[in-house]
Image 1 (cartoon, one colour):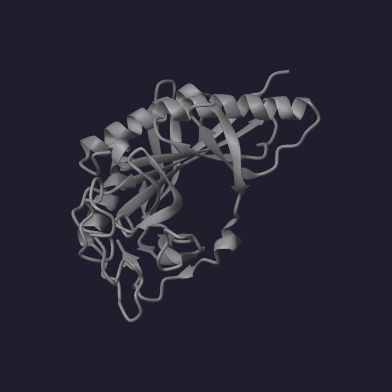
Image 2: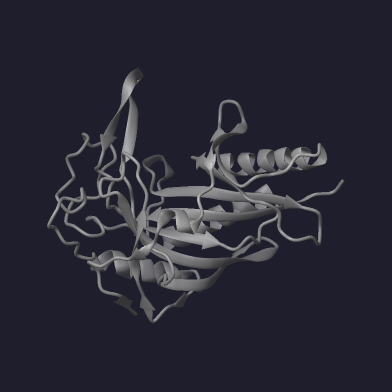
Length: 281
């Protein structure tokens, strides 16, 4: 039985500025001791107010123009509400209903991939489960990365093979580097990718998509898409049903593992950020 793979990618790119999105803390968190680049703003202390980084906005708009996007005349920041230990405020400042740009495109060999939207958001912190080679019986929280400015580039579901996804990421990285948007150093977490994968019979409607995380290289993206498409096809052929969920890519085992059921937008209870005025282009 012939199956067609459908792929869309969500790419987070750290903007190449020296300070965080809403405060003056340094963005140079890689290799730094934990919690040295923090302040009351990026850790969500009571009574503080954010100040938008104009340089980050300029780079975000430049990225949108480099990718052929349409700039929206008015965009709004929103609070994305969820609880996780690396999110000190209990919400992430992002954009939801009114992002700053839409409808771009990126050429890859043999086709053009649509870009659905690009929006700005702040990064979360990170959890440390080991120090060097020493495994810890507990987790440590490092907020150095919390508040670092990101853009999220959401593609259309236009890719049909793992190779097309690989080409898309390769060309996207080249554009972002050439335009001076970011260094895109994946080792430092400056470029991160999640893949949305589904399968269908040719000509049918899109199937149920699975989001795959923990993709630390372009090769991992390609391998994870190939595995996940085969897994879904085999599941359907055996009489099973694909349920929407988030899965993690295990590099060592070369397979995806369940992480959690996939959240919908209403789970995050988005609402406009009351401490930031709308952004006018």
